[in-house]
Image 1 (cartoon, rainbow over the protein chains, first blue to last red):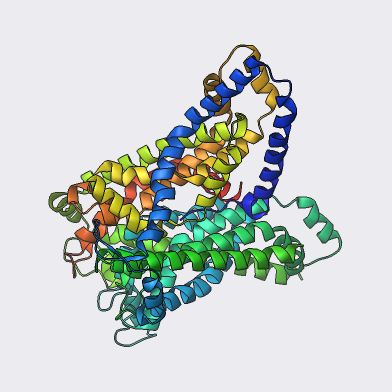
Image 2 (image 1 turned 90 degrees about the vertical axis):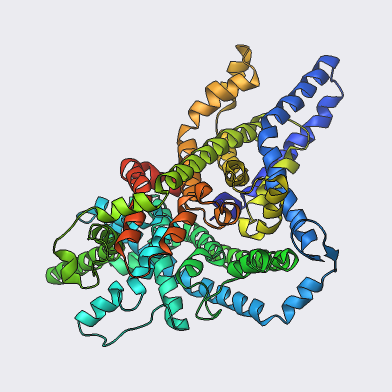
Length: 329
Length: 274
């Protein structure tokens, strides 16, 4: 998972370029009266800056900038890993248009994003509100809500496979013992149920992260607001709707974007819980990329699909940003 | 009125502790099952709650897997990645925040743009690069691509921007050079941001799945997230040994969490929000 800084969302980038602009403008004025000493001084500063920057920028160019460019070039070719590839223009992209597996994976991913994002965000907010109430045992509550996030993804999926699997799974056993079901439910064997299982597992694993972000937002809301509302005789629901929620708008934007980005990158959960099955019905885009690239050894097509994933993510983030920020104004 | 308030209070408690149960039961269940004898039937809840208990399954995990090696790999990769990210990001952030140089805006925008790029989108060229370098199944392959994290530069730059200029000017008058200023003023002042970033990078590295799945296919080079499913795949009916492996794989993170709970929660909130 990677993060957008909220300041970037709130226009922090613009702020930066403004100040940078000022600094740059300051240069020409000075230039007129620059002595040799000053010139040397500035030369020295440039060198110092690059010594500071070098380790990071070096790695960044190799492991981030180069792969982005190279990825696009690869996406225009066909052939295996390791060199002898043939340039085929945009063929990989046009192939995608008629590739039913691509559309299925894209559909799966988008649906998962649309369902998982609201459910995880709402439950995260609910947990944060509960923790913020200061009930008895708040410390335990907060720890319990967050601790699953500390487990490694494979431990998490392993636990949930054993909970959901038929005959020996915990869930069927509990449902049978309280008489809700007879016989076995194949949670991981039917498309709808498999998605439900993946969703529950993801929710359990990552909701704590969202809760923490909301909690930080809640603690920034001034008590005076609530006191004023109390004096006006507002009830709990009114206070939530008119004070809490509007104050959380910034955090909410952040959480929604972070969560949908994370959901777009869904891979480990289906890969380890259902293998993308039954059939390919729970296979998300990242798994399709993985299989194309590293099972079918088709790096060109895999790269093309990666680029489309990247594009779809950008569009989604942009739409959400527009929607959520606009309301604020 | 009072009665109604009391009733809603009770309802809130039921919801809250219901959620606590939902979050904790899978973890408690993992521990519980792991202490049952190997091959015991653990589906019936009543059988789970009655002895015998033992550590057979733990002994089996130790005998039949490289669990310690995997744990060490995971810890080692996470520590080096965290240290590298902290050091390199803070150096770069200092230069961008405090040293005037040509092309600063370009460098910063280049780094910002990287925030938008998910690793998932660049795995193919990255993997090919690692193969060409002959780095498959090596620590550099596991560690290096995760170090150039744009988020780190951004967070630290923002913090450094807030440090008053007078501090730097005073140090300059005292004859301190830039390295000196970075080392003895900026680094100590940014301790909280650094801790938050460290926790974030550590957790992310600890949970990384796709990348180690690609570059570590030799048992001895695997990290826990990749090794655990590989190990467990040979157990289909027995739950106790896989669960013991899960417990062993989680213990470092759980201990880390219990000790640094407050800092971790604060750190996660900070890297997300600030």
